[in-house]
Length: 197
Picture (tube, rainbow, N blue to C red):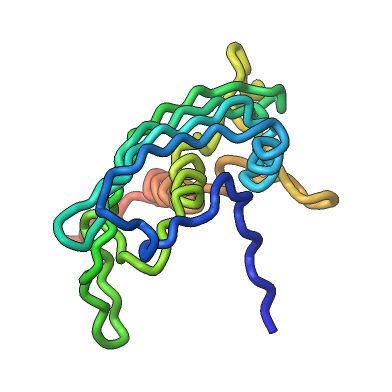
């Protein structure tokens, strides 16, 4: 039995499609409290999530499909990749999703990903909270640097598990090292002997 990955904290229960009667548009606002923001920060590996707000509209699309459009704003706090000092980043993302009832199912073993990543199959529920967390996770910068933070004098950041020798840039770039070796060998090799008469 494999452990299931943890679910993100929910800011609202998923909307049951069967209960979206009347095919009417619905305004949605997600503004989690401090406790929920702290849980989201922990789930996303952040130091803190100071602000989070999603304002969106879920409207009918055609006879049975739905469309979600809106804006996500957040302020995340992460550790600087160099100094480990806290760094705040403002995130502003436009949200657009289409939930299609008759989206074709993949056929066979090969699954071809749709080119438009805003289109999803319409299931029994629409999890807007989960979509908002996913959008935030994708918008969070992978590496942040505090203003004025500099790398070490060698221009590298050496990291390694405890007791192991840190990797240098050269060891992290084996093909660059091989290219340098090949160049050195070509310059160090003796000249071709002159042909004998």
